[in-house]
Amino acid sequence: MTVRPIRIVGDPVLHAPTRPVTDFDDTLRTLVEDMLETMAAAEGVGLAANQVGIDLRLFVMDCPDEETGQRVRAVVVNPVLETSPRPETMPDPEEDEEGCLSVPGEAFPTGRAEWARVTGVDAAGEPVTVQGRGFLARCLQHEVDHLDGLVYTDRLVGRNRRAALKALRRNGWGRPGLSWDPSTQDAVEV
Image (cartoon, rainbow, N blue to C red; front, side):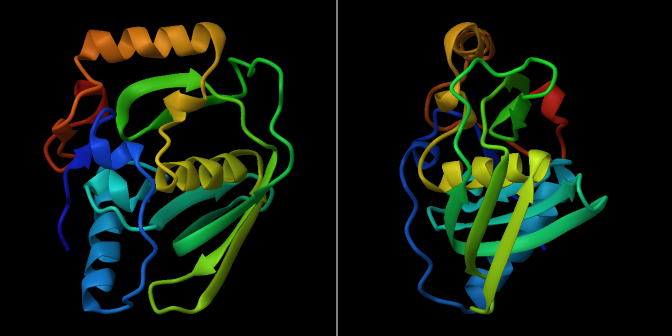
């Protein structure tokens, strides 16, 4: 298994929809293993393939489920997302803070639906469904957004969007070719 560099916001692979996975082979299994290793090294709860530079529609996650008190570890290939309605009000700065391995060390309040379900297949092509509320629902929406070419900062509104844009400028992000290596760097140091 290999820890792969994580692309930073502004890289074109993060801002374009990904391609469906069609080959369930050793190359896919290696990618999934590398993504799980990379996510763990980065101390993340989810990682989409395009975050490691691969424009395929899959993500891995190891996310807490507040309802069960368990962690949900999953590989979801070609996911389809369903959600309850997204809130139309400003997100709560205490309850709705969200971060991203492609925007390392930063976090901003982000409005998300309270409930979400993702259906797809695993790395062997077997059906998989993951659903949850609260933080787990946030994780599912965040990862599928990546696969649709959206970074969570694209969903920000008002003062939260302005703060994010200021952070991107301060860090020199928002341009192609930037990445960080979670095997040698901490997200807050990037």
